[in-house]
Length: 126
Image 1 (cartoon, helix red, strand yellow):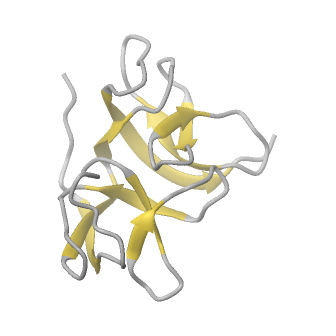
Image 2 (cartoon, rainbow, N blue to C red; image 1 turned 30 degrees about the vertical axis):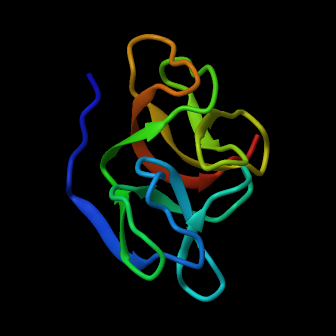
């Protein structure tokens, strides 16, 4: 069962695209300061969206601790994860990818699963 702690969260406005259907997706900050979905493994990830904000509403973003996140592919326990092109978590070992955390599960995850990740945001250096 996935769980999450509420220790480290920030609130930012949702950008020009609604995020109502994007709870537990990975987000980044747009150049205007609003939240948008992360769209690449090299994006400057802020954290994981915890609520379902409409355009202009406040998005609650987990930036530390643990979080639930939607898997975008197969992820093995202990793997570093980043964002795919849709804001979902995928495993990475690629140099210069921005890692947002480590998968804490005890079994491999599949695309669409809600998984638990311990947040560590850094750029991978192989």
